Image 1 (cartoon, helix red, strand yellow):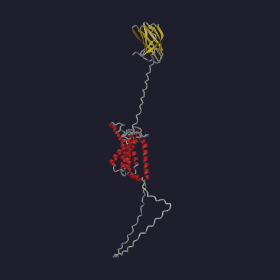
Image 2 (cartoon, helix red, strand yellow):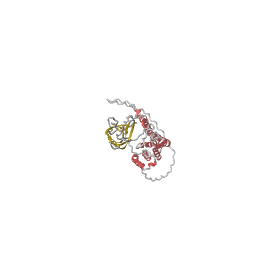
Image 3 (cartoon, one colour):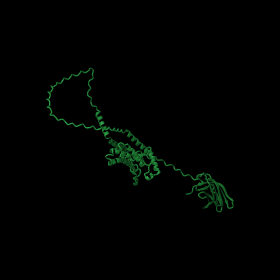
Image 4 (tube, one colour):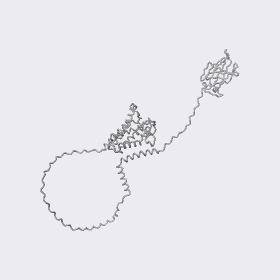
Length: 425
């Protein structure tokens, strides 16, 4: 919304067009009140009215129909006989323009929803293509800040200056078109003439007898009319009397209609504006609804499979390609994650031994595990595949296995390949 002072300035610019005859001060004040009144719809926020509702902000109170109806009510209540030299129809037009200017200024702002000019016939909100005005805060405390001052300076540039220029132009034009008054020169004073002397009237004599009437003249006989002159040779025949044109009644009716409209110009303007507002509202109301935008269902984006873990970080166990035997114990399994260990099987039992030393990187593996009552087993190798795989023909680790007894003698030493198996569920 624009600020309240800006709406009052717009009212003053409108009043310049009604300068002749002059707008009384109380009518100007009423126009300023109606120019600010549409923003009273913010009271609905306290009662749960939403912004986009018909009675919400910039809704029905900002429409052209509301401006026409409210102006008519004010004229009927306070200005039924006019205001000063302005007639009632001119007063209504002035008040209508003042209240309608509020919605026009709000349509120039950059924020909020648009203005429902044609409510209640249509709930569509409108903005002008160019919107140079910033939204003024509703709170007076927020308006009296640096932000409110910046908004007011911006409105002075885009609203105040054009309004003052337009009003000055209209007033100068009306002053130039006004006929000049020629003051009459004072006439020189004339000295009064002296009254003539009064002469006493002479005594009246008796009137003489009237003379006898003269004898009546002899009657005169009418002279015979001369014969008409002969027509000249090769003369055209006399034209018949002019007949009335068939368009004469229509022309007379048109002149009478124009004369009647010139006598009732104010009433014609009032009816024309009312019919225009109602016609635009009905036209907008009966417009077909815009087609709903076609919603194209997009296929969900394929979910990328989770990345496979690195072979060095994969949990599970590794089976050797050759299960050798040491001291009646057969080597069956190697585990790296979560805890490094080795497993030997005997008849009917399985024994798992932890590793006291483990160094595992993304490329190499080094383990040193103690076997109870046998000795120490070391595993030194590397990862053949970077990513964990369970393919039978793809070994995961290639390492050298060495088993020594407690005296340090080598009991078994060989290179072998290991195949990875995921953890058992």
